[in-house]
Length: 421
Image (tube, rainbow, N blue to C red; front, side, top):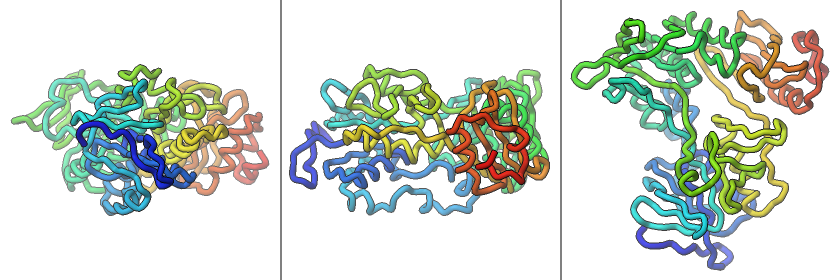
């Protein structure tokens, strides 16, 4: 589109500026859906850099990577949904800048789109490995569907896969690689996987899980260089001089919020785009949701940024209602995420910072990987993770919301219903 799109005509016939959503992601697609479900009849423009229509990212390190989930299943909506719901889908188009005063976004092709309200669902970007040799072929990151395709192609029987970073992405890729028959080495700077997320007690469960499945776990190591031959990676050299041979290196050292557009536009940015409880930014006509949003959470009485699927699904509903002027649109859901690794499935509900708890209480059989772990502070449940135990997220969530002091003995007793702890 060249020139200026000054507005679109809504179904009611009025010439109004549309609601523009920057980021044709899961969050962006869910926002468009929520706007229509709320009865909004004006224009919606959904803009995304990728050429793929909006899709979900969890399958990229789970079912899709394993070859168990077909490509068509990862998309948020069927291709005809956008036209049927009068959503203008602009793919393969990047937003270059936002002009809050003029209520416009400028595209990289010099086109402009005017907006009445703007929602940022720009997500996040993988952190790059800052070492020599990291720009070679065979050094892989996971964020987009084509990244998952490249990793999948590398997961062959007997292939040597080095995974840098033992976070959720690194461990899920390691599990997929082992299931594909590859030899896997995981390199992690800390003493255990997921240490900052889960703490030592539960992190050990995941270390044991991967060792049992033949993963070579190396903790407390630092990557110094990625070695190569003719521009293709062939190994990882560690700071102690050790070299790990590799046919491919998958880097999973975290993500950073894609907040550059917001910052350049003068919006308040601090570990993402800061919003209030309505997901409204420092500009009253600009909102943010998903990975990029550092939102004030009424339950925790602080700003938190959550990098998980549930936020991308649920926050856009609040943002949509808030953009339509509904004062009760407040995002107060308890954070949730899930993981699948080998025969272990887990769900996590709650929010706890590293060292923000004083004890972990287990209910069930930890050695058999059938248990619930609870993180407590001052006798109050901050978070819970159910591992191969199902249909318990609602009572765990209620324990967190209640903020009541619980009896640790009853909490640990599987014969006591969680609602009676």
